[in-house]
Image 1: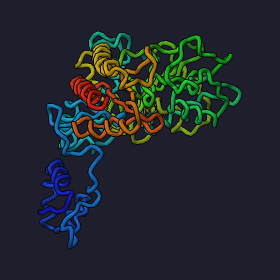
Image 2: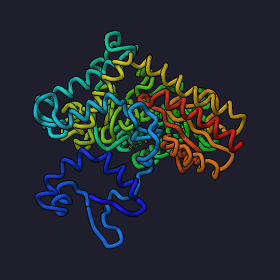
Image 3: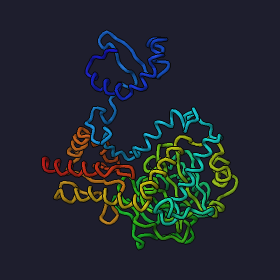
Image 4: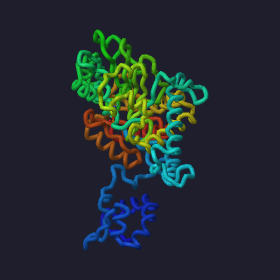
Length: 444
Ligand SMILES: Cc1ncc(COP(=O)(O)O)c(C=O)c1O
């Protein structure tokens, strides 16, 4: 196979990455030529006079060039993506094996029935591990007390966003009000969903202060008798977090999508804790819902079964086909967290990693500045900016060239953002801190 044109190096790199896959397709190529390959692999190899071969559909270089200098021991780049995000390398390696042949069954994990014995075991171990992590203490598998039967653990589809609708659909009766703490884009979206079902009381409005902090107790004005109080424990986009849950007389509902299991989980006072998997827990496609069964008992009747938490619980998250692969990877991530020492250890590592970046911002002598106020700066998403949008853009490009990918801030805030969830290595934070110091010196 020969390549030409300006994309030659990128294409070569892409092919190198996919060489196992391509090799697996060679039989098809020799049997059916290009058409056979196209059919088998989904790759479109096409030919023209000026560009002899081009991989259609794979010809755009990805956001992070695959040619970027390898910076991790494994040769991968440091990926600061806010989600889907970096996963633990041992998990990825295990997954590679499991996709081909899951535990010697001769069937890959993607291909196992969700009602078969192999997946039953995956499901049970994943839930058990989740209960240990979520249980009091959160230290390690042996020391932690698992979450009791008064709580259910659900593995659902639809993302955290579906929960924005499902929660008010279930718990916000027409004559009731729900309190929402508006601390950023994700709570604003949750509020918009809730308004379709009933009255929403804004117990905190962060917009006026550009969502630069989460509220102290004296900034929260609760309504008289809310059905629940919704908050987001970590605001992925603006980079703020709640050091501890807000006080509420009503059950708390927490969107913990971007900091679940990054520190010991406080369940007290909560009716429900929910999280999309794609930041701290695994691949996109699965939403973890941890809910008190007595809270679920207060849900309205008459909902379609697929939106009825009690029925989903009764069916053990398997009313229909669950996201089997995502659940399996989540189970491996839980096992990895436990093997590292549990949530106390995760919290310590995350604190140290974030400190490297916040200190680099402070040490830049004003070149870099934080979006979030002191005291509520997220250990998961470090948001900062340089003196101008133009320099921010230069920073993102130069960092990517240095193997530090995904540092562009969210479009609603601008600036820069380093997302450093559980699996993101400390050496990547150190590499970024060093890069920041050098960049500030050259551009300051
Ligand atoms: C805090 C928070 N909530 C909700 C969401 C939306 O999650 P999903 O895309 O799974 O619906 C995100 C996604 O980034 C998030 O960070």
